[in-house]
Image 1 (cartoon, rainbow, N blue to C red):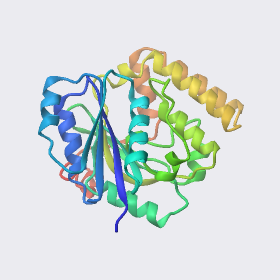
Image 2 (cartoon, helix red, strand yellow):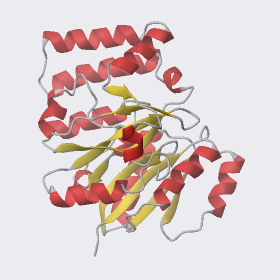
Image 3 (tube, rainbow, N blue to C red):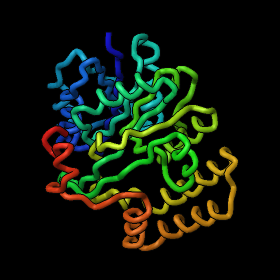
Image 4 (cartoon, rainbow, N blue to C red):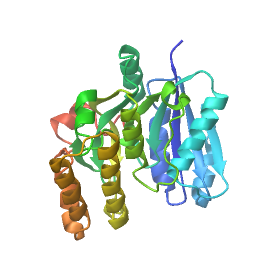
Length: 293
């Protein structure tokens, strides 16, 4: 029997029904069929979102509700605990955000990868970045090997968070997101896992469309800049990789993100390994964008 995948999918009050429908549809249309979709409703939702959820009729879907908004990290931890308790046969945990879109073969390729690489504990992927209308903007190519990802962990987050798939053993061993963090919770988790010796990898294919909407840079404001800086200091301490170049990089990125918005956008665009791409490019055609996302 094929491995069972449980998807960690969180919705909160600011999510629109249009993007939720598109994101959820990409999970339902996966070519890999042995999937459970766990959705946590983090507090009160918009009426049209509630109406949409009431129409979702599938034996694959499990709805979990928070009486109040407790944040993404705590919501994901809650889903992990529910799944570990109630779904003894789940082998893998897949992340998914309510505004992103998975390639139809994403789960199949990630399960196949983990099956053939038993030493890897977390696998992500490269992503297409799209704007709020779904228009293709860029291709964010991720490094692949465990060695590369950990070597460059100060300068680059090793994963696009909504693209990852975990082995069950990662969470069975007690690892969780830090519930006290409003953002950067994924980066702290990667640092904790790396320190404990868990193995990382990425599939260098755009298995997810990551939405960079109008509010993306606003959400990555001064508070996010401070949290990112503190996260890099935490990483240097935990990974024992203090160096002049890492300190310089951490300060330089912090100053850029604290700068006026146009400089912050420049930093995001050119310092994270993305290349511009259009819907009529060879890369988009190769992965049949947008037909099978």
